[in-house]
Length: 92
Image 1 (cartoon, one colour):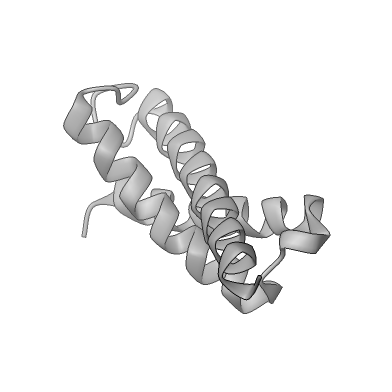
Image 2 (cartoon, rainbow, N blue to C red):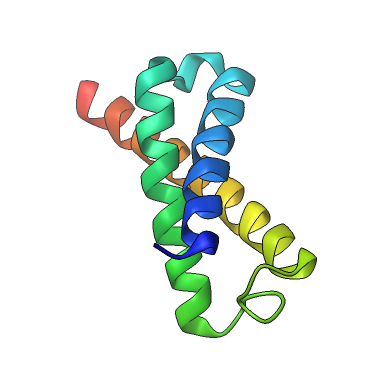
């Protein structure tokens, strides 16, 4: 398994939980935030890689690791927000 993918997944889970903590009314709970973050981190990292917007060489150098952390965390937070918004619309 690719090290950058693992970093994207972990930072996505963290990003999902941070977004859930900041927006308590949109939080899906720790498990829900983590799952949404994992998916968002993996998907976000894959999309950025496919678009060629990745930082570093794609290896395990510092720039690549920081880029994976950033893209995973942001992807996780974005997916959590989208899921929470959809959940809110469906609930109404």
